[in-house]
Length: 193
Image 1 (cartoon, rainbow, N blue to C red):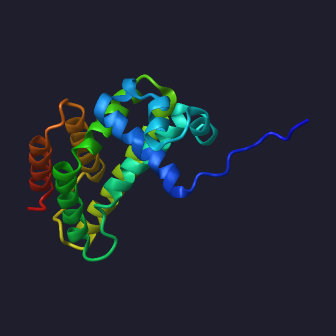
Image 2: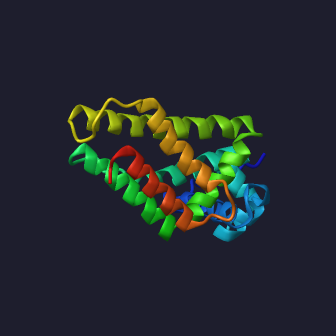
């Protein structure tokens, strides 16, 4: 009996290429238009090979969501005064709105899909919970070090940041100017400007 051939592991760059192709497809045609066959073709492999590495669409979506959140994490400075870390985060979001509007289209699509799909809901909620906790932690440190005045409802303010930015992503078509205005208003509200 011939031995079953298992495809060799995809190189990290090939795996990332599949995630990037799915990301682009969601940005272009929405979550409902995501077709694994087209994702595989965009990378030059067959759909069976894609399914070997991503057995379900949800696993592929998980990696797309991780990729999108890495883009958001790129706006977080880990050094320097806390107030500058907060300002850098908001400046980074404005930059992403200008340079990568597809990121916001993908996040909006995933947010909408999470209302109907329990597996995506769990991933999406974990992602936004982490983002909210990070913003809350930065606000708390800025109040503690005196760079922001208190008292504040830190939970409400962190929720306001995440909800405002995610809400701005869910109004198609994504309008970078609206996102920039939202970020500027959040900065004024939080006392960063």
